[in-house]
Image (cartoon, rainbow, N blue to C red; front, side, top):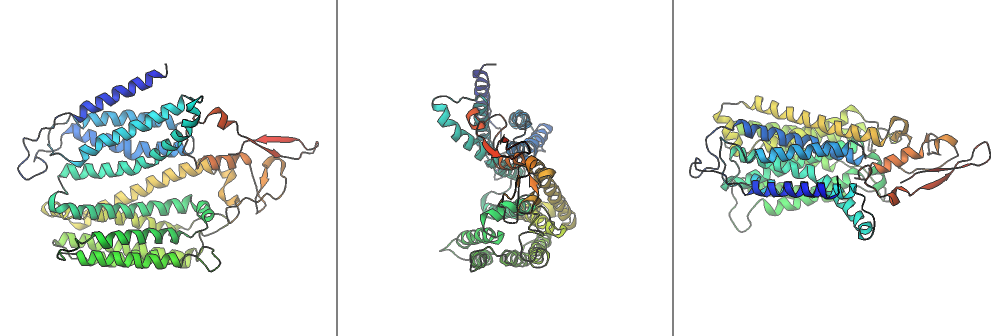
Length: 487
């Protein structure tokens, strides 16, 4: 196949996508003032939903991790994801049944597919190994762009899936838009925070040590920024204070005030990082405030109460973890960053659950559930189930990453406490020795560094792959030099 063939195929896909985007959506059955028709969702649309969740929610995130660890399965899996997503895209324009008014999900779908197309084009370009002339200079930017777009894809996909759920039910229009934005943005933020805590706990301790900052520095920084946004956006300044404006605004003020204190307390006088409890306290206070949030429906009051208690539990668990489990250290055992206490998994899970509970507690959702006679107990259990599944998926991806980045023969436990490798003596076969006296092979260290790059196996240029460092390795026969690759 010539280099032109895949580009020709991509051009055909682009043309078909444009035709699909221009497809006329019928809305003659939609009652006046409504966003959707009363018809049920048909089989074609259910297949579209299942396919797109599989592609953007499962296949692409897994493929992203395979790309980070430079697995040979990255390209086949992402190719499968592209094919599946294209099929799902066209099914979304071929359904019958329920009709939809013009909506954000349909508009954003085309942008998402163009983003996916750009990612595919960059991947094909890198795979062609064009390295002469202007390509030698262009290649490095394509590698960077391919990595950035690849890491953004899960976030953008999450947003599009939320748009899909909102559109399917005809929610978040008119006066409900502001409340929807608050619930879905903050709920996603809680889930994102839980994912970050999971990453730091399972695979991020060495990176955290290298930054010279405590985790509370970054947490407090984000809390401060978020508080500033909430302080000036939760109320239309110059207008009357309505509903819960004052409570939302005061909550933003608490966040940036506590965040500034958390930043200040995150360093000792000598500049070394220091743990503190401020982020946990902020989460606990936020949970208490939300548990007492006034609501119009009894069902909504109960769901908000469970959300508040869950968030309070997350904050309390974080305080207990720092104070009594890790005892102001970054991890349970700083000589073994992989070591963790089972209690440390509680805070991330409760944040996942809090996020789903808050996203599922909008006015329109509560009205729909109340009219369907769904109890808050059943609903909360289903949302907790989603939190368990998401926690499982994130943990599986991190295990996949860790198995490739740190094989058991080159575990992070062999790295010194500050993440700094300290050659100590010549160990012949093992390459170098770290500060605790255990050997770790140069090849394994190269894999750890490779795992930090979002690059595909075989996409690096030959010139880049030829970079090697000669490591002196004295042998019993008389000082033989051994060349090993280090990135």
